[in-house]
Length: 89
Picture (cartoon, rainbow, N blue to C red):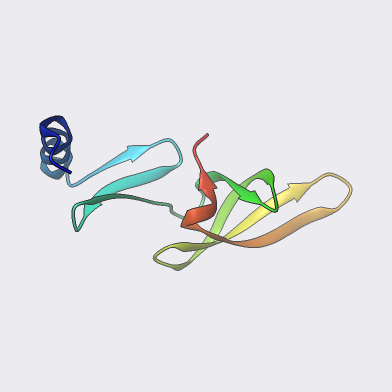
């Protein structure tokens, strides 16, 4: 992208190695902003057209998380959630 404002933004983010956003930490990796999550972070994600919310229990890979969601009368449900499924709060 040749937008000078975008380049300024990337330079500003690069000067801050990482910063916290709602529910995750954003880092500049290979020129891309990447948000990662840690155990205990609350996230929302899409699954079969529904938006669900839960808590990260375990980081499985660099972009896949074991997430627990509590459902009244059903208990805890567990999901493997990929970065592509995660949506902002």
